[in-house]
Length: 235
Image (cartoon, rainbow, N blue to C red; front, side, top):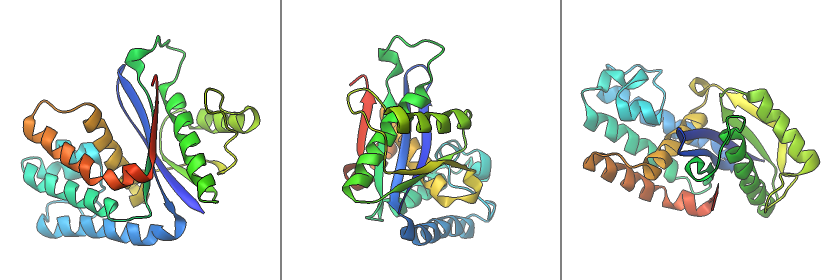
């Protein structure tokens, strides 16, 4: 069984992406332990950070939330972010998939949901990957609004197909979409971290050092990107 951990990122009115880290279920304990060690190392160096600190891209970038005690220590936050991303990238059985909608290039009405479209593209990619590996995949998502709507959409795809250029009834997607709070899952935190790197790659910061840092992290994630795939609309 494969597990797909899913998170969203967007720049409102411009682009919307839903991203997934996929790996075999039996790899989860080792990955979780490794990310626990990243946080434990950070707490040992900076005791002002709580032992319950979560790994979140925006919080580490901004020095907010669990990482607010390091707000005035950007080098420390950069170090933790790098450690986490390098840890994630070190697992060869991870694959990274991205489904997106370029909202700025479509005539988009208020009744349309960019998360729904991005998620559909992502599920098609994940289904293809599971098929090629002769596996089924269970999808675990970070908590978002409209959870029941996305579960209903998955059931619709199973009956009617996803439509478009790559129609599929997603036979390799197991069960329903499961939503989990990030505080209870290092894996949900892991996909948050790489999804934020995706956002920063698509929308580089004005600060030169920040741009260079996220460009470097994007390069660190090259192996995960190549083992996965990306699809967005319009092409």
